[in-house]
Image (cartoon, rainbow, N blue to C red):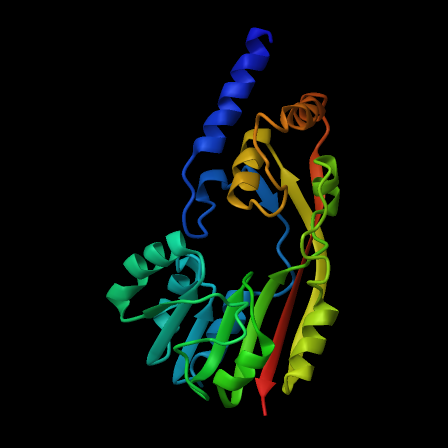
Length: 254
């Protein structure tokens, strides 16, 4: 391996080793750029808070997005998180503000520790959820708001690494049907496709290590050839643009 390739490999390995916690991608800010959808999830969540006395943030990560809304929180705020390292981060960040952080798998058939009709508002950004449990824990008239990465998002990027979506059924249509089947009334939602632009391959290394379900067993060593092909495209003047899909959904307990 020549000196230039060795230097590139070492730079990518450094990105692979870079620490990641919570749901904080500030390390690669402006290095991977995504189109913004035509809705504002945080704005929609904020608008629902004044009419809510209690709120749950499901799969809060490290509490980053929840803290963005702190000036608008209702009287009682609970957050849940299922990934143990993130639970510790979320508790460190949120407990000083009076938020209870519950360790909970949002795919679980039963949300242990959460009471029936406990929350006027449940929010969820890019996390799992159980529609039947949402119906149980929401008050009558309570609202569930979620923004999700579509299960068929970035398929073109995954294909470059011979990977496929792990969640192909995670679609707007299926989520809507699950909510209806659980007894919730759909009050809003939309499906959207935009661009996901990778400006340097090192940032992509960091991104794929942070989201290990995208390309199973990803590493610089195992996927060096594929990474090098992307680097050559960039050096040849091509942009690395892939398709990103999101959807949002709002449902109300009746």
